[in-house]
Image 1 (cartoon, rainbow, N blue to C red):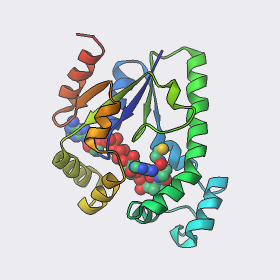
Image 2 (image 1 turned 60 degrees about the horizontal axis):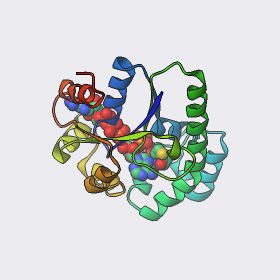
Image 3 (image 1 turned 60 degrees about the vertical axis):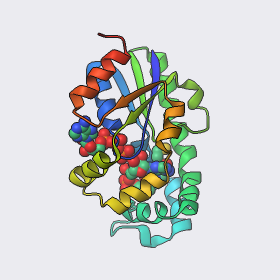
Image 4 (image 1 turned 30 degrees about the vertical axis):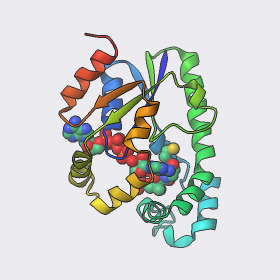
Length: 197
Ligand SMILES: CC(C)(COP(=O)(O)OP(=O)(O)OC[C@H]1O[C@@H](n2cnc3c(N)ncnc32)[C@H](O)[C@@H]1O)[C@@H](O)C(=O)NCCC(=O)NCCS
Ligand SMILES: Nc1ncnc2c1ncn2[C@@H]1O[C@H](COP(=O)(O)OP(=O)(O)OP(=O)(O)O)[C@@H](O)[C@H]1O
């Protein structure tokens, strides 16, 4: 069972690639962003720490963290993002690590696919056998984020400015997929990378 880390910038197509892994190659997909959303839910220690630092104005009417509000703050300010991740990353890392260990013990899947924006530090990373970098033409990413997520270009630029550059991603990559065209073209590249054709 191989553990593959899918890396790439915002809107490059990591989730689509992970989805192809799940449906075509018997993979269990772990999405670090989704786990990040779980660990900041109301009632968790992480939630309390975030409110202590950022204040109650980031809450919605039901007392849940309004992720858009928090995102607007942290993606516009590197120091605030660092603070947020110093609170969230230990909780995310623990959940991801425990899940990978459980899946490895179960031996049911051919792949464990971990969707993360970039490689980081901690116990998870030595478990990753290979990094697959999802590249996508920058304009295509802005276009897709605007069309499918209603994300303004400025917000997308703010997020991307906090992520690795194309060159840095390439340095980590064992496999590079170009997802600038159709998903079928991306799938064909995956088949080649996995020696299926
Ligand atoms: C700021 C938050 C609340 C915004 O939530 P929201 O649902 O609006 O956005 P989402 O999580 O989908 O992220 C939007 C884009 O930003 C990227 N992103 C998220 N966190 C980071 C980060 N610390 N550094 C770089 N890119 C990031 C995501 O991969 C995605 O491409 C949320 O992203 C968050 O809590 N981030 C900090 C935790 C974290 O680092 N999560 C990433 C997984 S390790
Ligand atoms: N090849 C493609 N053709 C058409 N649409 C695509 C393609 N790849 C991705 N998309 C769409 O573009 C958007 C961004 O893709 P996706 O969510 O997979 O990116 P991501 O890298 O996971 O983003 P994030 O880091 O923000 O989570 C989605 O709406 C997705 O359906």
